[in-house]
Image (cartoon, rainbow, N blue to C red; front, side, top):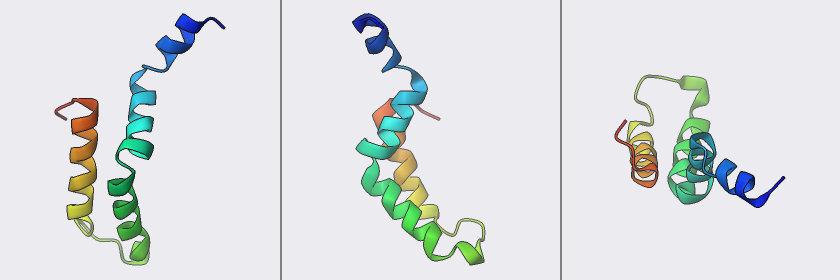
Length: 67
């Protein structure tokens, strides 16, 4: 595999998303995960809304997307 192929593969949207989720936004992802894990037996709508909003905003900012 040549260097240009490796560089191109590293820039795929899914890899960017994975990197942002696990490295760039790890603090927010961890907080959201802890919230979900703490009350996974009693799931209800918007139970971790604040944590998810922070995680989603970090992803949007990092990936420069508006979804």
